[in-house]
Image (cartoon, rainbow, N blue to C red; front, side, top):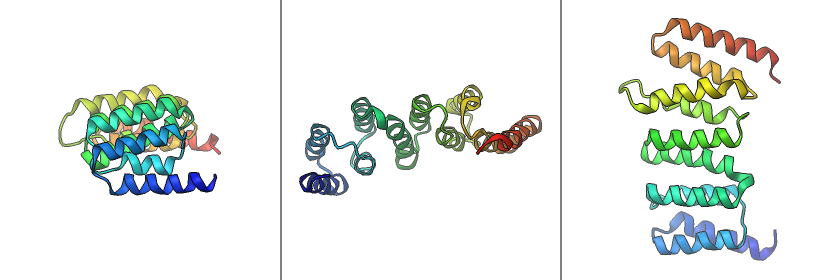
Length: 179
């Protein structure tokens, strides 16, 4: 990285951390794209800016994923984390965990993060989608034992002994064949 790019990166990071001006943030975003700064540290700081609205985060993360296709998995996963921690939006978070899982279907992190979104207090529509996501995608994951183990815990909390045992056994069997 050239000295000029290091300075640009430092300036963009400062704006993304400190600014609450939509115009200034947008201009900095444009510079990030124009200079092709495919740096997940900067992108995480940017998407985590407290002044960004839900709609802005959606718009920016989609554009980043289209522009930096090699980082799309990380961008979608991080966006899911941002929606979960900043807004507590299970539906938005789950949507981005699903997108991340589609970009890298062998990675376990989106599945575990989605499972942790499950709301035991209210029967939210996201709950059914979480179960569907795991049931449909877990078999492709490289470290299935991590997903199955978390899924077993979810079913234990739900009081479903049969599914708890099923996924506990799948986790144990999967762990034997994983690196």
